Structure formats: C-alpha cells, structure tokens
Amino acid sequence: MRTTVELPDHLLDAAKRHALDSGLSLKQLFISALEMRLAKPVKTRRDPPFVEGPADMKVPAREEIDEAMFG
Image 1 (tube, rainbow, N blue to C red):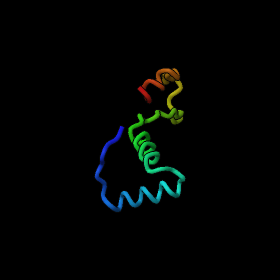
Image 2 (image 1 turned 90 degrees about the vertical axis):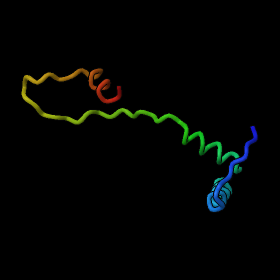
Image 3 (image 1 turned 180 degrees about the vertical axis):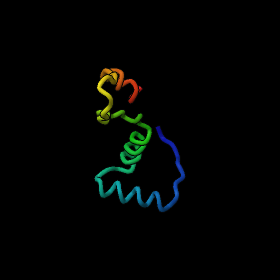
Image 4 (image 1 turned 45 degrees about the horizontal axis):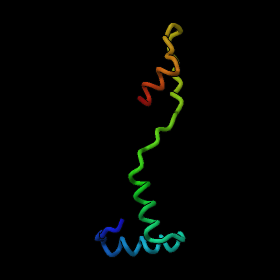
C-alpha cells in the first residue's frame, strides 16, 4: 500500500543514512522500525528473589509465584 508521510528533514536524512549503512531500502527500514515499535512486549521470566523467613513460613508454589509476577 502506498501512503504519504511528512517527516522533519533531519529525521528523513538520518533514516536514509541508517538504511544505506544497514544495506536496507528506506521502505525496509520503515517496515522494520514500525514492526518493532508496534510489537507487543515479551514477558521475560525471572526467578523471584530469595528471602529468608521464619521456619514455619508458607513457601508459595512455582505456579503461585508465576501468577503473582506475570499475571
């Protein structure tokens, strides 16, 4: 699909230089930049921090931790 977008001169110049340096066409650069910007963030898994507590403290199951951290 063809469209027209108005960009500031300095931004277009920088995009052209970056595309040339990267071996991409300006179209490929814009598609890549838009795909990256519009992509949904990837949730990364981290282990919860180790916390010492009383001996009778309930230790949550891995599933409970994951739910609390990542929803």
